[in-house]
Amino acid sequence: KVIIESPILSYTEKMKAVELVIESGAHFVKTSTGILSKTNLHDVYTIVKLARGRIKVKASGGFRNAVDVLMALAIGANRIGTSSAVQIIEEFKVLKETRAI
Image (cartoon, rainbow, N blue to C red; front, side, top):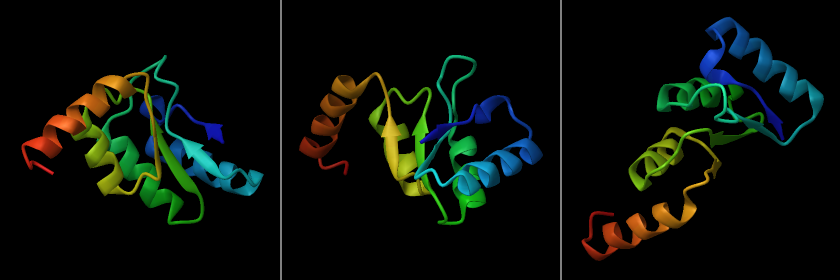
């Protein structure tokens, strides 16, 4: 996996970064560490579209709730990185119990 800081990159820089990660032979491109800036769903969408299925995408760097996780997966992320896993799992339980998902 190679981490790019997609929230602080221009579209052109994201395009180059994704191509370089693909050329490197890595299995995943990770959207962000979450330290410099938080990843948003638009960043995830952009990276997924640039990857065009040639590499897997790990959405990371700011996912703190179940709804954002579901959205990132729906957009096309293959994996989620979060430090809020326990909270997100609890939210998923509530969503399932209330049949919201």
